[in-house]
Image (tube, rainbow, N blue to C red; front, side, top):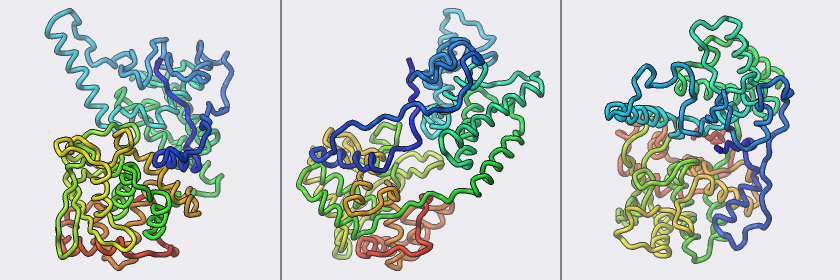
Length: 461
């Protein structure tokens, strides 16, 4: 059975803080198991109005049978539903010949390439929007199917019925899941793109769903307008240094890894996916930072560290290789990423011949840090300093570093270049001198700041 957990929107901040405690210092982790989020009490129709067994699907952890006609297909099963015209090999002979075996290989490659076009590298099946769609259709769709292709000769009434199902889905996301209309619109867009690439057509036969647009606009008006963007604060240099001295001041290899990761992420303006492994991904040396990707040198009387990083901007096209060098300068008043990296290599040694396959930052089991663990540790440290951990996450290191650089008087163009922002990044990098990069590295770890109105609050940094 393929499991499709129907989880809540997000973990509570205190749970993420607990995860941070457990990730850094298991000996002081809070006891007790975390309550799992169950199936939400959504408004659903009676079983009599559904095809056999569809209503019962919501009570199960699996999604078997939602592919329709009892074929047991799910988005996570790795095979396409048995739909008319959906097979890439329709109309082709399937005898036991070598030629047909070659076609089978091509069929598998086609599917794998389409899967790789998504951010999750799995065809979009792992996205929250798609998982909600699968479970929703298993209950609300009359036939219980989540694949909704319409025939070319489908009537207008059939297309309008499909549009109404999408409207019900959007309303469910807002009313039952507690999301904003803007989030519901994103979910529908995600499902539309997934459906088009999975089955070759959009929902409702590709018709312009005018009623859906009116529905989203009306729900937004009923809530008093668009919700403000989620506020995300950056950690301050003094705040981070004090918290690490209190909570990560031991001599263990794990604490050395965490201090180096946090100081590197702050001073290097690293994204969460650059610092740790993103959810649903596995660490591989070709994309993740390894011990081999860090080098040291002396310039101008100061020791510097250079990291080879593969940029991981969300939504950007994949770039082969670790094409970006991140410069870190030592000797900061609050933070010193170079010294932290040196200590990491001393406290957690590894034979040089294994550096190329060893994660730069790793836990006690040797696994690379995940973005979720980084988020949990940041929240935990903020809690220990008496801050509101709900306003902080893994991205707070990047936001804090950029804000500290601005407070230190670093030109906006240099901040943009060091943080690898903007579509015109090529032009920006051509104007970035070695002296400007070194000046940035020395200032970002030496200044503290207080927030004022108009500071960097957005995760878009």
